[in-house]
Length: 128
Image 1 (tube, rainbow, N blue to C red):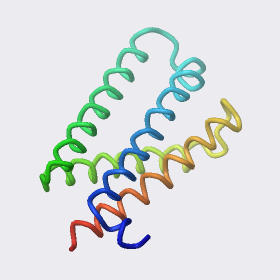
Image 2 (tube, rainbow, N blue to C red; image 1 turned 90 degrees about the vertical axis):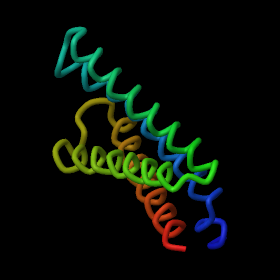
Image 3 (tube, rainbow, N blue to C red; image 1 turned 120 degrees about the vertical axis):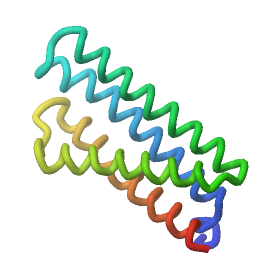
Image 4 (spheres, rainbow, N blue to C red; image 1 turned 180 degrees about the horizontal axis):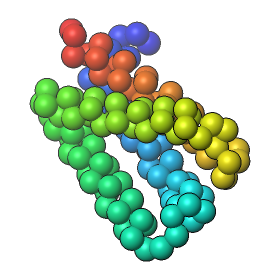
């Protein structure tokens, strides 16, 4: 298990799981948070563009990493860190999250754990 965790396939798989948790979080965030705090189309457009850019870069990084590119791993590591920082910000600023309870709270914790595990796996793989 530790060998897989430190392998390229393990790092990519765990980063994909972190990306999927980020997508789920973004969907719930736009459903519950934006609707309550920032009504209007401008906020929705900006959040959608941000999520599309992050996910697009993440997919590019994972595809490049699967081809052996170290830069792709660095991109996946950086985007996993951004995802973890977003989760930490939400947990520090809004915990317990008042909207979408308990679904949004669970989503934030899942995103934080998935991102942290992904960061650890990529870091261990890059140190080999």
